[in-house]
Image (cartoon, rainbow, N blue to C red; front, side, top):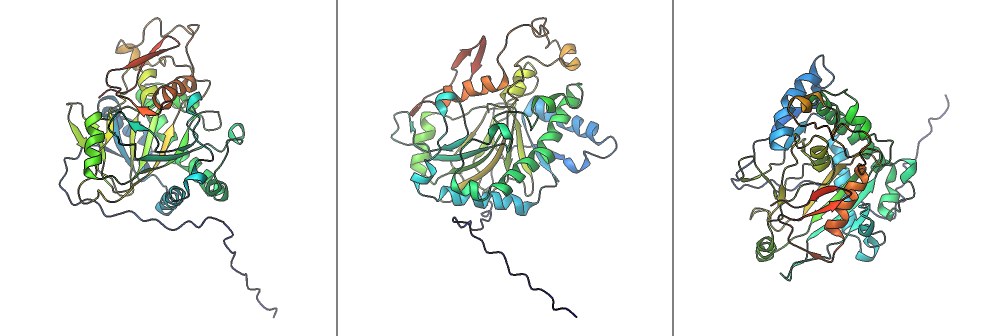
Length: 375
């Protein structure tokens, strides 16, 4: 009998050691949580499942703007691994992180955003850092990568695509059903294999004192809407996110174990002439029992494809509601693409050294009036 070969374990030759990260304890404070719809994506492929889920999602996307998806099929160990990679990145020396900054002059959001901007005249800087990683498609292969991304790129790219396939794809189909469009209509406008500014984001809110939070929030409420089509926020337990409800109240968004908090953003609202709600939200000081813990974030941002025109979609529902005008139906009317629109917003907000008050401000871009911050 031939001897059994013993396979030696493969050594980890990565230069940067990724230490496991685990979610901190939830707050014990009794906060006023926003009641959000919970969409069970495990029902998507059942007979009639998509239609039933679309009915459940209707109120969330047209009135509230936020909801939670559960039973996505994503392995939570993979989610925690991405949190761990992000946490390791933010612990790198500043010189390493600064290698590939976001090109805000061109409205591009790929790369590292440093917490370098001053908040008005408060003497307080932003406490946010982020790293945005594009889709793994040939047209974006030349986007530079930090060492930690390059070393772990296969699993990052795989997770990036899996989030799109398991969650984003299904949400775009459900919203198309709501709009009475072909099921693949919005999916084609956001196709993964086409160039867009979709990105996976590692994000951290560094610790501040309560006084620093108070001074920053005293300058501006910080309420804003997101630039693209959809935002996905993976659960991490540190409270801080608040939404402005349809009744005009600020309420906390509760992290859901195994769930993903989702919200519609401005391009979807624009493409539906306001039917889909891009809700104002903000991040505020965490509860007292969490204020000394960094708020690590893992998010996925969905952007329209570079060939998607910023024109109201030909939805029978919009037609019946009087939200589809003759001008909207004109295919020859020149309009910017989704990528142009989003990048104009990114540049307007971020290409500055000082965070300015944005309440009630807007700017014009290729015939569109764009309002950035709403609270």
